[in-house]
Image (cartoon, rainbow over all chains, first blue to last red; front, top):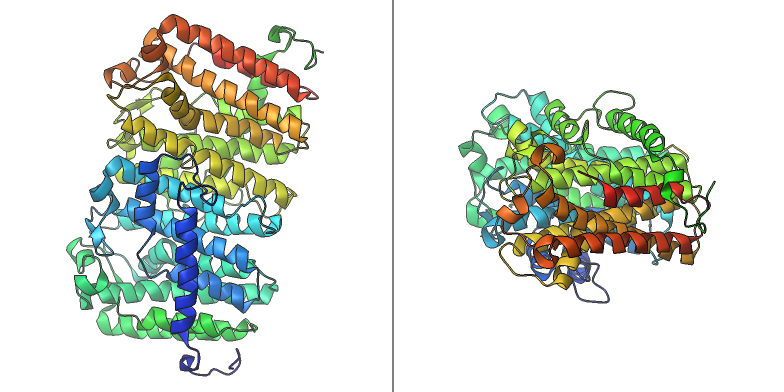
Amino acid sequence: MMDGGSGASPDSFALAPWSAAHLASVEAALSRWVTTDAPAGQLHGAPADLVQAMRYAVLDGGKRLRPLLVLAACEAVRGHAGAALRAACAVELIHAYSLVHDDMPCMDNDVLRRGKPTVHVQFGEASALLAGDALQALAFELLTPEDEGIAPDIQARLCRLLARAAGSAGMAGGQAIDLASVGQPLSEHQLRDMHQRKTGALLQGSVLMGAACGPTDAQQWEALSDFGAAIGLAFQVVDDILDVTADSATLGKTAGKDALADKPTYVSVLGLDRSRRYADDLLQAARAALLRARLADPSALRALAHMVVDRSH
Amino acid sequence: MMDGGSGASPDSFALAPWSAAHLASVEAALSRWVTTDAPAGQLHGAPADLVQAMRYAVLDGGKRLRPLLVLAACEAVRGHAGAALRAACAVELIHAYSLVHDDMPCMDNDVLRRGKPTVHVQFGEASALLAGDALQALAFELLTPEDEGIAPDIQARLCRLLARAAGSAGMAGGQAIDLASVGQPLSEHQLRDMHQRKTGALLQGSVLMGAACGPTDAQQWEALSDFGAAIGLAFQVVDDILDVTADSATLGKTAGKDALADKPTYVSVLGLDRSRRYADDLLQAARAALLRARLADPSALRALAHMVVDRSH
């Protein structure tokens, strides 16, 4: 078993079975919590058609990278597994709501997501708007259970981290910059700022929420924050690369649409080769931060960082 | 000084100066918290145009009934004033975001709100969507400050109450039922269920969030919950009455629009006279619940209940 100081190849950690087991927990929990069925359903009494749109937005789709980061970070600090499962689902609900709203006609006007019609195409615009709103509220409800033995200070910290990551200084702020930047030349600095908010904040938040489920000292927290920032940015750089190098079927969404929409991307600002080198640099920065964090078991976090950069979709 | 058991007229409590003082605190806090200005601004680093839309949606408008209910309930249980001010602002941010989204073209498509152009008219649809999303996140951020001496269990309880009130079994669920009910005949039971969610849940949540800032026993909590439910429903019955009896200038929004939109209302289901009697019955139920709560000082809550029913806009 390698440790944080070995710098060993991530190949010695078997990510596939780890991911499969954790993804199964997340899928089961999401299906159990986003439902009107009593007694497990949080949404008992909610209108069935709204919940149907919420389930459509959340279930059976996506890489679940954010939940996996939460669970990996929690394991790395030997934290509270029950709290981490709730945090993993909460962060995925925020991600899902942002996609629903982002796809709407007044934003990106996209009709295809994860190979399926987008929520507003399937259920109508008003239902998409409300389903997104309700998913955001549900995320905070999941983080604050009444009777599950999760300490109130963990609950409060998780809400604080998620609200900051999702809000106007984080994801929603990044979306606003993205919106204002169509057809505008952005400097590399401006592009990085946009992506650190739009995508990076929630990925970094996922790492920190996992870490908040257990004990950390200030140095570990800062190192994990650096790790999350590096992979958050790497994710977006790779996304921009895939937008021009992959096809729609592989991506499960419309390829080449950023270029068509005249949106600035890492590829348009840095070119393809420099973008690839930048992604690799960020991976090395993430690995270095993990070493600084001196974690009990950083294997899954390190393997996920490699997956972010090496993925094909 | 009257107490909960006296059944005295609310006239002996001077609501106007109480409201004026508390409204001033709420306005100042909202202006301080919904800003990019350091150091007080929560949104330091957020894009200026997004924050501008958020401020437009929140500041200088509205009756602030929900914040006043939070503050009155906190005083009634002699709770933590700092926590209650944050809760008061958080619940108003949720209310404001719901209005921004509700006014959008895919929902009610309204152009006038509080006598001003609606947010999407002023800033565009995409900005309205994002401003609403960011306001919801900010509400939960306000409830979870890092260093203000508000106990984590209060922070977690406030998040739980707000998330439930705002989500798919509460406000967002009520909006979904409202959306599906246009042109549909609703029974009185269905109409009540819709309004208890759409408007009632957040008003009741305001009372409970105020109460969560201090100590209560189970019986007090249940009585305050009943009080909140009664005034929540009364508010909507009176809203429906005012929609047909007041003019747009007095309301600060388009009068008669529910009837034009063929939406079921209390007036369309019960008629005007029975709606008025129902509002009075609900006020009496609210007063009875307050008596059962045996509060140290229920004066402001009782006066607010009267204001809800006797208001002209």
